[in-house]
Length: 111
Image 1 (cartoon, rainbow, N blue to C red):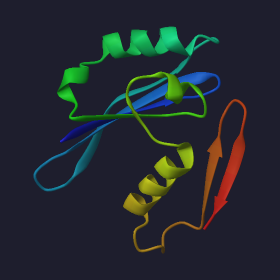
Image 2 (cartoon, rainbow, N blue to C red):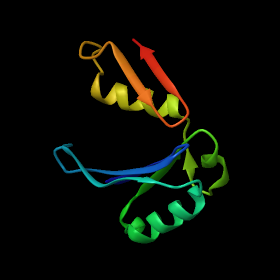
Image 3 (spheres, rainbow, N blue to C red):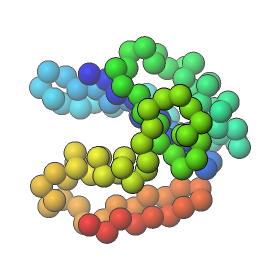
């Protein structure tokens, strides 16, 4: 299964593709972090044109504002962080904080 995550931030557009094999090993592809120069719509359309989006079975968008203006599944940043943390730290013993930095916000999630 292949999934594509897109984060539309205040200053950048980031993507990462994840795929799992039959042994549930995860590999990453399509990792891009590009400034959108104040035009996230243009950056998103250009990035989607560069990717083989039909190869993904799931696509989700996160971001504070612009994610609400696209016709794709979306998730809030705290929900995305929580899902990623559960995947990486399911037993609760590996991490005690997460730092999320962006163009407009800086958040520390103390665990």
